[in-house]
Image 1: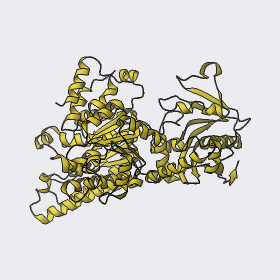
Image 2: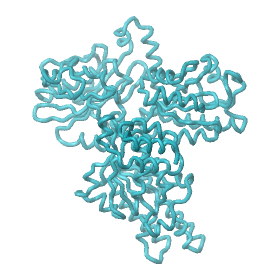
Image 3: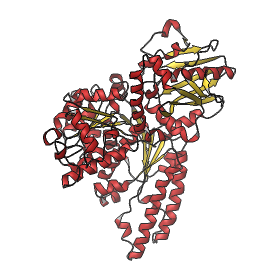
Image 4: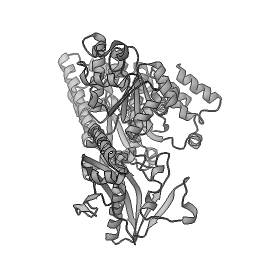
Length: 631
């Protein structure tokens, strides 16, 4: 057993496991061998969730329902270990053996009652083969596949939470029951067409994820042990389930909005072969040699991530001028200076550099991933910046890509236009910074920025972005909650429900969808369930303009008041006084005013409405009207 599980055992024996749960991710950070997550999961099986939450109240608890075609309970231990590696607690609800159809469709069943965040339905070869006759041909399997696809499409609409299916491996024992190669080829085509169509179901089903097992099998070996499959109904083996659980851990992070946003890279022996300070620009390489080509492949992988909205930054112990010169002119490099939102090249400790990068990009430290080949630097960052995820690279550059992608730090449920435009947005942020530096006062800067704001209903394709905003926003999240796309659609549906989104732009470009308001009308009162605003537009008057438009809309609807809540979290203290600054008063002045420990309920009687800031131009109003000019 590896050192991480050994340390967990020591904590458990001393009765400190619940109190020290915040240390578990660091203890398991480098555990990626066969059985590591399962070993950790077994040690954590008896953990007291309430005790963990007493010590660490912000620990996410992820409810996962597990069912399938065969015996699937073996996935729970590795899944518990994987969630623990990412600072989450698993609440598992197990269905019966081979009863997945009943588990997922019974309105009074245990799985639905659990209100799971994720519902795992593990499919295997019997999903198809159980529906074919004793003597069969590829055409029989094709018909069984059609029926299975229909069932899966129906389950995607009915299953509780986000439903997770998987592609089905083709067993050799099935294929080789056909003695002629033409029939085997036909079976292979039919089977792959089934899997392809299963994967394509995600294009039309918002609450469906399909895990492709083929890449996991390619790296992990056999699908199962034939003896376990025959005698115990375990048709997906321990190695495959461990790899599957790792993918589910990444998915659980995405569902909870815990997606990392920025990859911070070392340079020497990480981004290129060689040490810049010793070898000079001509002595480092990312092409032309076997080792150099490996670094070049790593850079291409990083650039691919950046094209999908992952911010890039540098933290390197080097002279800044030499680094910028190399990034600008070295012929081997795929990544150039403009690809990086921040470049910190100096001789200071790297934990401090990472904190500086987070401040520069207006991100929390837990939005960063740091990749470095030096064990000493990684250890120093883990100690000094424990919120930062650390990727352990080593002396073999051919493994850099594998190690970077192993933990799916940037995995998300769906990519939005705002994600793809993120790097360009941070370039515009630098331009705004230059404008701010040249302005005489902050008020002059705001006037010169030419901010525009619109507040109106979301377009259908924007629900994914709104969900992402609620899950990822921490600083201006007034109730501390977030919603999946399905939850958001459900909460916004029906009479009296209200969902509005904010769009903003300025002289440097379109910021896109940056905010959201969710509420419901009860009688003559609009109760706000939540208000969110991206941190990248905070402090420019956007939040005040949105609330002014919302209050005006409430009065236009003939309502008498608007109610709201502020629920303090570890991150949203900057927004504590937002409602009072816009004319709201505490509903219980004697009990809740000024409280920082618990929720505060606010009330606005709509008698005297706040105005949008003078420097903000209004482009859309909640009633559907459009405006053009200050309000």
